[in-house]
Length: 142
Image (cartoon, rainbow, N blue to C red):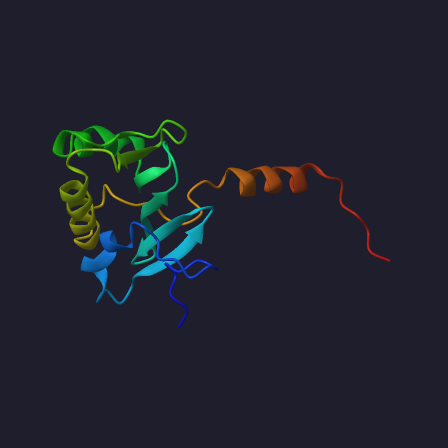
């Protein structure tokens, strides 16, 4: 099986070590997402590892806005992401990055309902297309 952390140049993703505690997890799926790696457990996207320059260098935590305050209270290094404010962000530059990244992985592995979203979380495009199709006049078939 192809290692999801290896790019075409066969370099290891710089944050791959964050997922070491999940190694034996049967539901673990890691997929490329832009220049990041999206991490899925039990079908939910729970983390996104970002290796680029700020604000894309660290761990993004997909979560609902309603859960953000509680997660930030438990892990003060988390903050809303500058570009994706609906997700929380743990910058790699944070002094507590390694400890907090391990904490996030442990919470995700334990099934913390505050961490993660269902894939395809926004149905906006599907709804827009459905409305467009519903508004279009019916075509007759020859």
